[in-house]
Image (cartoon, rainbow, N blue to C red; front, top):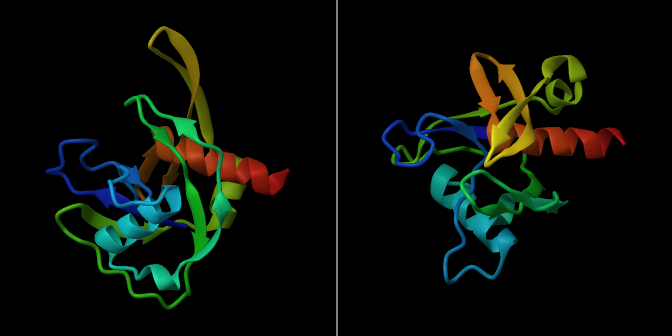
Length: 145
C-alpha cells in the first residue's frame, strides 16, 4: 500500500502519514477524478497506470471533511516521483502487515464531545494514525470479512 509522509512545511498535517489525495477541485468529476489527479500531482503517477478496484465507505474526519477513499492497484515497477512541495517521502506498507491484527493499536479519544475509536500502526519507524489508520483498518476489516 502506497503511503506518503507530507512535507513538513505544509499548513495542514505537516509531516504526517497519509494516502495521496486532497480536496475536490471544480474540474473534478467526483472522488475518482480527484484521487487520480492527486496521485499524479503528488507522486507523478499517470492515472492510466492505476487499476481502480472500488471505494471504501465515505468517512468524516476531524477537520470537518468527508473523505471517499478510492482503492486501486499499481504495477509493481511503477516509478514514483514525489513532488517535494507536498510529499517528503513515499513508501509502501505491505497489505499483509495491515491485515495482521497484532500490528494494530486501538484506543479511544474524545472529539467534539464524542468518544471515537483511534487506530494506529507503526511501520518502519512511521507512525500511521488518525484518518489514514482508520482507512487502513476499514480496508483490513472488509478484506478479512
